[in-house]
Image (cartoon, rainbow, N blue to C red; front, top):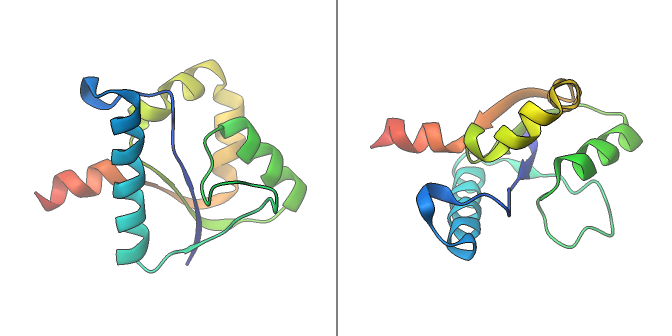
Length: 112
């Protein structure tokens, strides 16, 4: 399975400082990727991280490649709320490049 993961570096999880929030998102997403044997795809050769931090950049790169992927992994819908509500059409276009959107926080809660 091929996928891309997106981390919101401007979202504070449950009041955590931003650095802790980013680390929590990274840790959870990396564990999920490893546990489910997801091959992380890097669309842009100049991309610093193996993940995206800006939905606009991800959408731009997806349009350049014009291909679909198995999954987009995000920590939570709350982490994406600003983008979803400010750019609903772009969110729908972004989602259309993936067979499924995996919300990792929900899988963590189900496991507990």
